[in-house]
Image (cartoon, rainbow, N blue to C red):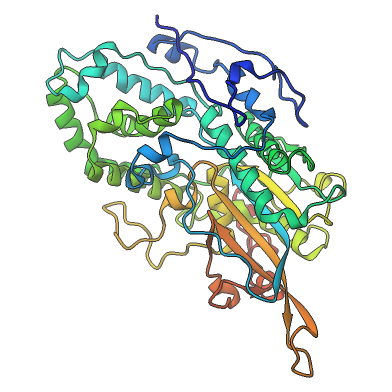
Length: 494
C-alpha cells in the first residue's frame, strides 16, 4: 500500500503547516494538536472509510498572520468555466462584485450564514467513487493516453472531513468580512458565531474566526459561542423533517439521459472496466473532489469534455431544487427556523418560532443575543437551499426539467451553494426626507440580501433597483416563516 500524504500548504505567514505550534483557539476541537498519517488504498476506504487524518488542517485554525491569503495555483490555473461547472462541489467564487451601501445609507448589522469549506466526499459518495475507480484500475488495458496515469494511481481521498483548501476558504471569508464590516466591530461588540455540530462545519467556523482575527491584526478575536447538536433542534442543518422526500427520481432520470453514452466511451477506452451510468457520475464528481484535495487539477478532469461537465452540473441543480428547494414540498419549511431567528436579530425582538429552533438556547441572551452587529452562522448546502426557498430567493418560472436543462435557468447550484457559500443579510439605516423635505431629518431601516456577493432583487418586498426594501416590508414579506410554514412543519411528522 502506498502511504497517502496530504499536500503541503503554506500558512498565511509562509510557514508550512507542519511547523505550526499548537495553539488554543476559542473552540479547541478534540485532538486539535494531533498529526496522524494513515495509509489508504481502495480496500481500506471500502472497509474503514470513517477514519481519516485530521491533524494538518486543524492546525490552520490558529494561523497567525495578517498577510493576504491565496488559493493559488488552483484557482488561477483551472479555467473558471470548468470550476463553476462542478455544481455544489465548486470552490467558492463571488458571483458579482460586492456593492457598497447607497449614498446616505450605512450598514448597521450583518447576518452571515455560510456553508462549510471544501471537504472530502461523504461516506456514501466516497464508497461509490472508490468502486468506480476500482473498475477502471481493473481494466485489461487503456487505449486512450488520458488514462495512462491510472497505471500508477492510488486513490487518496478520505470521507466527510474538511480539507486544508476548505479551511483556507473559510479563513479568507473571515478576512473579507472583517474588511467589509470592521466599522461594526469593537472590543465590546464582537461577532456572535454559531455552528451546526458536524466537525467540518465547526472547523469552518473556527477558521472563519481565525481569519477575522488575523485581518484585525489580532485586535478583535471572536470565538465560536454555540455549537448546535444535529441530533436536536438545529436551524443550521436540514435534519428535522423525516417525511421530506429527496431528489433521486429527478437526478436518476437525468443521469439515464447523459450517463450511458459516456460510460460506453470510457468502456471502449478501458476494456473490461464495465462502467455504468452511476459510475460516470462518480468519476465526474472525483474531478472536483480530488482537485480541491490536491490544490491542482485532478487527472480525472481530462477524461471528460466541457459539455459533459455541464451535464454533470445540471445533476447538481436538480438535486438541490428537488431535495430541499422549491421542488420538494417539504423543502422550504426546513429553512423557516433560521428565517425567524433572522427576523428576531433584525428587529431586536425575541424569537417567535415553533419549528426547528432550540427554544432553550434562543431564549437566552447568552446563547442568542439580540444586541450584536455581526452574526455568523455555519451550516450545510442543503440547509442553505431550504433557507433561500423559505425566504423566497431564486424562484423559477418553471421547475427544472429532469429530461434536460433550460440554458436560461437561474437555478445554478454552483452560484447558490459552492463550498464556503454565504448569504449575508444586511440591515442599513438611510437618511430620508423629513416632513420639511430636507435630507437627513429622519432615518429609516432597510434590508438587502447578498448571496455570494450578488445582491438579490427581493421583489417579494417591493425592493428598489438596488435591492433595498424597508425592514418593515421585508418582515411582512416573510409570512410563510412567521406562520411556521403554514402547517408544512407538522407534515414533516404526520
